Image 1: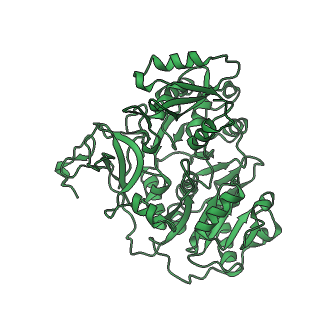
Image 2: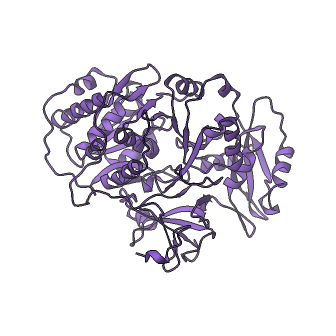
Image 3: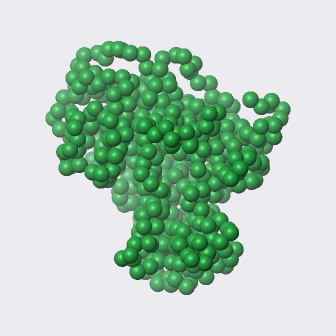
Length: 537
């Protein structure tokens, strides 16, 4: 640990060991030797109340915090006594958002069993790969997805079945058969897989306790609890810890079983939503879509954006339309339990920044070629060390060793820098940099510029093979309705704002940009499309 006098109070950088330290007060976490699960910890932070915990926006159904606790106890009992779920068993949740999904998460975790999740849109092949990693003994799903679970070799229960309703009825008390330690596995979630097949990320109860403790420390006194509209999937790390945050802070979570932009706008108006965790594409839509003007969104106070950096132009457009809504940008990975940096109300905002290091987080910026640590303002790979770092990748020792070193540093694979005031800026994924001759071109930089054009609704940039240059920047562009924007106009728009080596040299207009559930651009799909023999690009 660095001597505090050697740490720069402006940015947290210590020149003795080249580590950036969080400038927030350290979090007081429970002693790691105390047996504790994340469900018990979250429930301990907020007394049961009759205020709504979860609301289903599709039908208005709701459940209070008191009722949620009762449901969790009933499900825990049924999981243990009826379904014989034990500590260490993996249980798969393959479901669209519903009131029962958060309750299942909390019940499974309370038994020391492991929650693993999958996207309902996953193909049978993708599910087979994920099941091979997590090896669940039980799956909860819906009748509508039965065609995807018919080949599963373990028990499958539909959440919308009479069998499940019986599980939600109170029965025998839960027996504590084995102590749950904070370092025990809690979840197996999946990395985004934007550049290849997904990996199973193993997170512990301690990882989640550290995240929840951070939110509890930052919680503000207010007349009424925040009301959050969930626009991110519950199976994603962002959605998962929002469930825990809702319970621990007594908030209200509004769920949308199926995402539709008009439904989202209507839900904000109807339920007086104050907060939305969002992926960047939704910020773009809120800033640009004319449909937004038809609804009363005056209750909205804050949006929290993660998954990818927001461009300055997008933030400015959003601020012009919503001058009273605060945009909080954060940075995290599934491998860091979704947290590393975020912006608080007390900190000055910086366009394009993902905020400052959260409490208990240490960081290094490292030269990707030499592994030499770098000073403030210099670009390199971001390494993180904190109690939120994953235990590893399930069944993949090679990938774990390549990502977590012997000192506990998590190598993020992101090209970043931390400025003189301690703000983190994410430039791009190291593996996604376009190698144009001797230069490196970050696709995200060009995407931000493209999205600043008033006639562009969405955009993505990929490397395209070129015999002379090695790779050239190629853009996929979605025009706004009614636009007749030409290829030449787009290329000239970018060329005026960048160095010659960053110019877009190939372009295709498309109807939509493929994205992961977290809002990350699926560049591998676009690369395959661009290189397909059937493509006319």
